[in-house]
Length: 450
Image 1 (tube, rainbow, N blue to C red):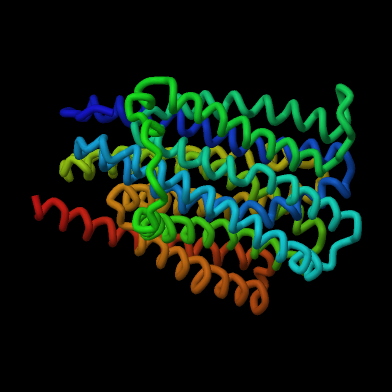
Image 2 (image 1 turned 120 degrees about the vertical axis):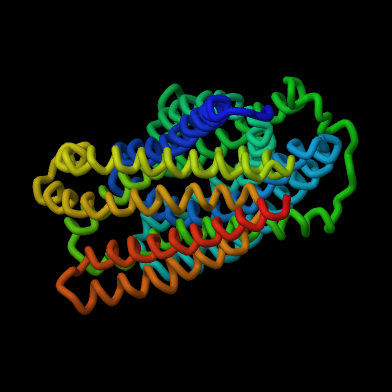
């Protein structure tokens, strides 16, 4: 990245950083999409098993990889402050920490998985597929976490195109492995839904190996010489990474897990209601890739400027990102309002599900607006290394406001299942307001101090 002196230069750098991140996120989203679709082609039981396994894995993966996202603002600020000599030590300690987190998760999963699945009262076949799917995923946990560190290092330098190409390369590999292992093609064993887990684990290893080779051999990453000196493990360095990363990880975990919790609470309603809810939620997750990508780009750009003590430039990037996110949300909202039936028709041909999904999709428009404010601000605050407030706001807005309000509306009003959506929207909107207030105070303080 380079220092910018005009709005035109800032817009160019913002686009250069943002677009590859967006493409990468869409590719990662597509992996989960293809896992689900291809498992469903194997059998309904395979689909159910993979869905259960994925619902358990997704919040944990998101939360723990979120901890390792601390690398991005740390490296961005080091580079912005012209202290590149500190980067190799930080990356190596983050790789050690990633291995440790992976090992701890594997050990906990070994003892806790069966009791968790037993509590869910699943059919025997579904339970076994979910169990084997998660065991297969476990083979790739450590390389996934280590690749997360390498990806965050590359992104922090503004080289988001590189991680985009790596991710795009991994997508067809994952789909091909699914084709071989789920259905038993090209002489491979037919593993059904379990094959999706094996394919994902192999893909994680491939991602890590490619990322490692790029970091060591390709400039500008090789210039840092990450492995020229193998530093000893430093628990002090881990403490610094965790101090920044744990609030990030927990904030992401609270956000992801709340939707899983609502889906479980939806089980009291009819199959048509659950299916319609899933249609709207999946499409909302798809659209969420836009503000999420903007959030990740702003962490890099704001972190770079804050590291160089250019707080006015950091504020300019902040409002550019928020403005783009709100503009895109309005466009998507208008498109969704006009084409709700067509969007629902992508997922199902059942007329009853389509009709109900259209109503859920209208509620999701309000999600888009709140996300367009909250997600970019979260990324901005991470760029400032201000993460504790984000964690607290996520906890309060989702679990103290959103879920309880949603439950009350669903149980004691005629809104029924829609009550959960109104609760979540209210919590997200409250969180967006809290975060905006925090951002204003932080920016005023930073600029006054210069």
